[in-house]
Image (cartoon, rainbow, N blue to C red):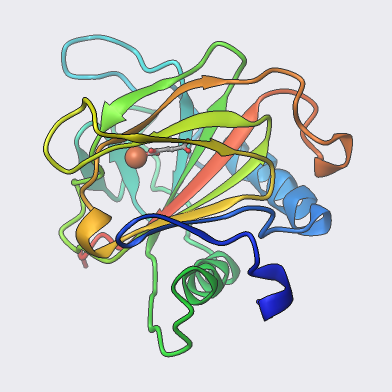
Length: 216
Ligand SMILES: O=C(O)CCC(=O)C(=O)O
Ligand SMILES: [Fe+2]
C-alpha cells in the first residue's frame, strides 16, 4: 500500500498493528463472494464444538487445513469428513501484502497455508483465546468485512486486563506477530447494521484469519 493509505495505521502493542480501511469496497465484495463459495464446500461451514460440548456461536469454514478445537487436520472429521478446500494463492498473496503494509517490511516471505473464515450473526461472539494450535509463530493476518465488531486485544499471560479494545470495521486489517503473537484476543460483540451497504454483506460479519501452521 502506498503511504497515502497508511495514515490510519496504528500499533496496538509490539507486533500488533491495526490498519483501518485496508480493503477497498471492491476487494470486500470479492472476498464476500469467495466466502459464499467456500461455505458451500467441499467442507460445509459449521459451528465448531469445544471438547466440553459447548458449541461456538461463530460459524467457521477452513481452507488449506481444517481447524477443530484444538488441532489442524487435512480432513474435516467433525464436519462430514471431506478433505478441506485449497488455500488459494491469491489469498496467501493478499496476506503477504497485508504484512508488508502492517509492518512496512517489503522483504517478507510470509506464506500462510491456512485460512479460517468466520461468520458472526448478530448474536455471535468469540471468547478470549490464544491462537496457539500452529507450530509456527509466524504472524496472524486478520481481515474483516461486514458489521463492525468490538475486538479485544489482550496480553500474553491471561484473559483479563490489561487489554485494548479496538473496533474492527468493514475493510479493516489487523496483524499480530512477534511479541504479540500469543496475545489473548476475542470478539465480545458485533454491532448490527453497521456494514456499508456496498461491502456485499447485508447481514453479519465475516473475518478471515490467515496463519502459518508449520505442518507439512
Ligand atoms: O473475528 C475476529 O476478528 C477474530 C477471530 C479469531 O480470533 C480467530 O478466528 O481465532
Ligand atoms: Fe483468534
